[in-house]
Length: 166
Image 1 (tube, rainbow, N blue to C red):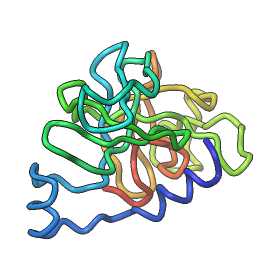
Image 2: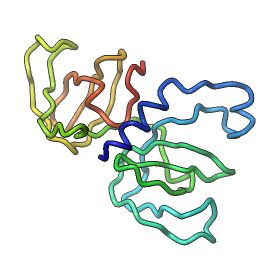
Image 3: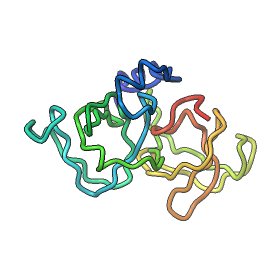
Image 4: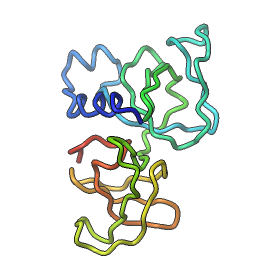
């Protein structure tokens, strides 16, 4: 993930959900917000209609993306590398997943702990790019599952959940 994309994400923490925002986006859900892809192949278009050309194609079901805008049944999304485009809302799920992030030059593995403390035992080490399912987060730690491993990860090392999000 690029440094700029990481800065953009943290700049959008704690979105304000006002009546004006609800009227503008139609769903009443906060923007920005994280969701996941429902299918293994999802076309990302340059604009909010099937008349717009396909900019690129995602090929990973369950991948987290950030919704940054809504227009009718289209959602403008951003991926962990900062690439943006429009996807039909039916191709997105409210399920929460995250990538083990690698930004600020930190490509070290993420320790998965058996409790939400850096002093607790390490149950696994996850490489950057590993996809994990998010359970609960307390603002500092998230309970996650990655493959056969379950445990707690530092929230600021995950892309798919906002820093401080509960």
